[in-house]
Image (cartoon, rainbow, N blue to C red; front, side, top):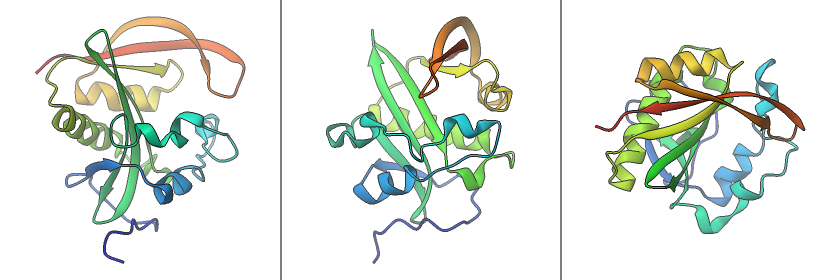
Length: 168
């Protein structure tokens, strides 16, 4: 089928990735994602995610990054006080291969296009997740402050960084 998303393992440089609305099929695949330790606390598998399943947000707040009908990752965004907050997850087969900055850069470009937004972008990231922090810094995100928050599904409070990408 021409428009079906391919979930097989492939290589990508993310340069031609496009954000498109989530679908039932892409959500089913994302819900099976499992990451290698120590990043396994971010697994989607066996962790109900009501937000991800909320079809009313598909294409307005939640998207998947695809390239040549291959699912590369998931991105979400919400405006708060006129500032765009983002979060994303790269498909596990691309993690740990030095592709994080390319993934983040493409997601930012696509979210700016979709939302017609040139203002600053904020995100939160576990202070322990140095791999993600380095990718964000390569794209231009900078540290703003440290907050206390919970890793989803863990009941564990820890330090998170708020990071900001300045306006264009």
